[in-house]
Amino acid sequence: MGQKTQRNLTSLLRISVLILGLGVVLLPIWYMIITSFKPQTMIFELPPHLWPQTWTLKNYSAALGKDHFGLYFMNSAKVALLSTLLTVFISSMLAFAFARLDFPFKEPIFYIFLLGMMVPPVMLIIPQFLVAKWLSLFNHMGLILVYTTMNISMQTFLLRGVFENVPIDLEEAARIDGGGTWTIFWKIILPLSLPGLSVVIINTFLYSWEEFAWANVAIKNASQRTLPIAIALFQSEHLTEWGQVFAASLVALVPVLIIFIIFQRHFVQGISTTGLKG
Amino acid sequence: MGGEEPPTSLPETMHTRRRSDLLPALIFLLPGLVLFALFFLGPMLYSLRISFFEWKIVHPDQSVFVGFQNYQRALSDPIFRRAILNTLAYTVITVSVKLFLGLGVALLLNDAFRGRTFFRVAYYLPVITSWVIVSLLFEYMFNGQAGLINYFLKDILHVIPKSILWFADPILTLVPIVLLDIWKGIGWAAIIFLAGLQTIPAELYEAARVDGASSWAQVRYITWPLLAPTTSFLVVVLVIGGLNAYVPFQLMTNGGDPMDLTHSVLTLMYEATFGKIDFGYGAAISYLLTIFVFIVSIVELRLMRQQAG
Image (cartoon, one colour):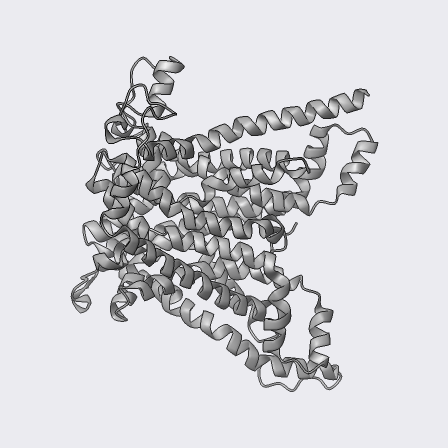
């Protein structure tokens, strides 16, 4: 009896702490949501209300109709999707080689790739800018290639851990059946690593969807801008129109949310199948 | 590895396996290697070269070699020193708070209970928002006149006599930036800790409970030591991220306002490079930061390995 009461108390305490924390975590997001529904006259109201006195959809129609929002949205979608695809593909190939193949200088090559986890992406902007200039890559292709490169190191590192955990017996069985290396990679390793791949997909999509620094220098043509650039520019041009800024921002969050909801089921499990295992 | 014949005593399978791997390995490595060489290794080396020149972006061939002058200039520049101080303070505070709270959240979310998935997703929500968006959001919440935070502190808690102009003061500006990073980062630390917690066998806790160990003792003597690899991974990655802070500083301080006192190292680098078109100086700043990040990471890994051993 005493033990049961104690357990109930513990779980009550746990829920209370979690709900309190949740309030702090969600408050800024909630504030952004209601501000996006406030009319412009109430943006700097005192006292600020956490529940709008008047609701309006004007911010949405204004923000989404203005400045080619749809175009920027599609630009971001294209860049993020292709970067994610390319990263998943290239990183899993690399990780497969490091996890399952034998070749000379394997360790040193792997460590060179790990360098990419240590060097700040922003630091590379200067020389990447020069490379992009040399290859005429001030366009979406330039974004996709750089985003993929900046993600390769971390994601290869994670996937190597995942692939190492796929039982070797399956691979040997496939070899006996005459399966080549590509078959083993494509038909055995990849399908058995979906949780780990989910982590890579979420990481990479998030990075490419929100990247600001590189897009800010690499995209000169206004029609090729991605959403983060467009939103930051919009805010600096319409300093006080926070309702519209947040309306645009919230719409920009939707794709990330969708990707996260689709893949989150595997997320925690996926991380523990990676190289971070204790 | 050279051209040597493998010893004949080597098992036949091993021999053939090694042989047959070289070609597939090349094919599997090639796309990644090309991309990495072109957009990472090449740029890194090129950047090193630039940092020794007074670089002319339009006519690179007219650039003047200046040796270590760009580096010396940075190290003796008070704005650069201030940027280092800002970045270090930001990193130390955000990393320690994120580790502490992240572990707390992970421990609360580790056991099975109703609504666990909901909480996991909810606590992760700030992580998936984008830096640009939440930087603007915090700027709005910390607005000097009618911001939510000022209202809360002044009119509800009565802890400040009048509204604070957060972004007019070089120290106070760091408050929203630090809070933003903590708010956005706890969920990530928690999820990584959760993954680590899942690898700790439940039997250990059962045995401890049988021996009458308190919850605190279980955390102290089972969870914490067994989480060491996860913790060291987190420390290294979070410190690297902290030292590389860019977007929140750039957007909330407009790159250094007021009076260039609120730069992070990277906003300063960005301004030198693309604002003042001083590529050599910008590259030198990047290299100083990279060397520092590299040394810090190695020291961290050493220290934690020692501790674990």
